[in-house]
Amino acid sequence: MNKPSPIEQPEPAQSTGNVPPPLAMLAELTHRCPLSCPYCSNPLTLSGKDGELDTSEWIDVFRQAADIGVLQLHISGGEPASRRDLVELVEGAEKAGLYTNLVTSGVGLTPRRMDELEQAGLEHIQLSLQGTNAELADRIGGYKGGFERKMQVAAEIAKRGIPLTLNAVMHRHNMDDLEHTIEMALELGARRLEVACVQFHGWALKNRAALMPTRQQTDKVKQQVAEAQERLRGVLAFDFVPPDYYADFPKACMGGWGSTGLNITPDGTVLPCHVAQSIPHLEFGNIRQTPLRDIWYDSAAFNAYRGTDWMPEPCTSCERKEIDFGGCRCQALLLAGDAGAVDPVCTRSPDHGRITDILTAEMAADTPEFTYRKL
Amino acid sequence: MTLELTTTDRPYLPRGVRMHKDRVRGGVVLLAPEKAILLDDIGVAILSRIDGKRRFGEIIADLAEAFKAPPAQIESDVQRFLGGLRARMYLGVTP
Ligand code: SF4
Ligand code: SF4
Image 1 (cartoon, protein in one colour):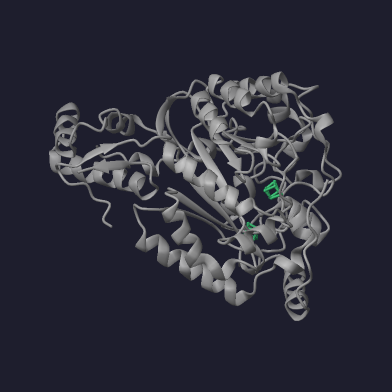
Image 2 (cartoon, chains in turn purple, cyan):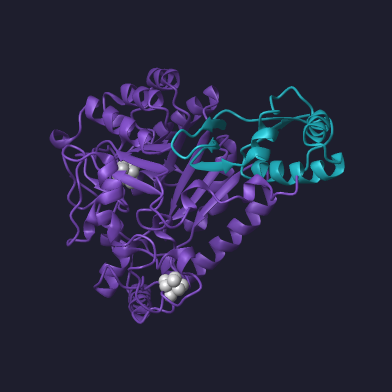
C-alpha cells in the first residue's frame, strides 16, 4: 500500500492531451420559474415553453450523455419543477445510469411529487436559498411566500433523508448574514453548504451595481468560511465561490473550457458553460440536429478555448495556466472586449484596471434598485 | 471533530454516495453529491469492505491480509483515505 491514497489521484476529468470525456451535464429543462431573482444565471432573453425539448428528447439526451461518459446530471432551469414531466425525466436519467441531482428553489415540489421523485431514484437535491428570513428572501426572489414554501420543502427533504446541499447565493444584501446561513444549513440537516458569491453574467451583470459586495464584506466572508470549515469538519462540508472581482486570480471557469462539463439549454443548444452564448462569434450545436458526441468532440465552439494552445500572454508563460485556464472567456469578452484575452480579474491581465475602475465606481455610487428577471 | 476512525467504528457510505463502474473510462468511480472520484484498486479494495456492519479494526485486518502488508501501515493509509472522504461528508460512521 505504498501508492498514494486514492483521494489524491487525479480525478477523471483531468486527463490531458486528448479530449477527455465529459463528466457532468447541466440540463436546463426550462427557463420558466416562479421566482425572479435579480442574479439569475439564465440569459436576458428567456425562452418560453414552446421551444423546450419534450420528454423523449430530454431522455434521449440523457442516454447520449451517459454513452459518452457523463456521470453526473444536474437537472436545473429556471425551476425544473415547472416541468410537468419532471418525475419522468428523473426516471429516464436514472435509467440511463446518471447520478441525478435536482437544482431547485423548492417551489412546486409538493410532498407527493417528492415521493415520486424519490421513487424515480433522485439522488440529491440542491436547494437554493435567497435569504435567511422571509422578508429578505422574498424580496430577493421577488416571490411572496417563497421562503415559507422553501422551508416546508426543506423539512420534507430532511424527513425523507434525501441528501441535501444548500446553495446560498451571496451578494451585498445577504453576505453579512453568513453565520445565520450556516446555522440554517445545520438546522435543515444539509450535508453541504455552497457559499456561492454572485458571478456577474446575465441578470446578475445587469444588477451588478446593486449586488456587488464591498471589499470588507468579501474579506469577512472568506474568514468566516475558513473558520466554519474548521469548526464544522465532518458535520457540514463547504463549497466556496468567492466574489472574483476582488480576487487576485480568476476562477477556473468550468475547470477549463470543454474539459469537464457541458450545458444544455431548454431548446437543446449545447454549451461549454451556461453563459457561453454571450460570445457572439461562436456557433453552438443543437441536439435536435447533431449528436452530443459530435458536439463535444468536434464542434468549433467546444474546441475554441480547449486546453492551453489558444492562450495569449501572460498566460502562456504563467505557472497557473493549468490551474485556472486563463479564467472565464465570457468575462474576458465582456471586460477586455475579446473572448480570447486573459480574464481581467487576473492581476496580471493588462485589462485588470477595468475591474478596479468598476469597483471604485460602484462603491462610490448609491445602491440602485433591482431589475428583476422576467420572461 | 476528529476525522480519525477508532477500531470499533463502523464506517458506511451514506445515501447519495456510491461506487459506480465507469463503462466509458474503465475502472470504478465513487459518485457523491456533485462529485466523482476515480478510485484506484486500493480505493476499491477499501470501499468494497465498507458495509456499515464491519468495524474499522476488522477492515484493517482484512486488508493487511489481502495486501500482505503490516497493519500499522495499512491503517495510516486507510485513515488518510477515509478521513478525506469524511471531511467532504462522503463517509458516515456509526460507533
Ligand atoms: S436564480 Fe432565481 S429566478 Fe433564476 S431560476 Fe433560480 S430561482 Fe428562478
Ligand atoms: S496570467 Fe493567465 S494563467 Fe496566469 S494567473 Fe492570470 S489568468 Fe491565470
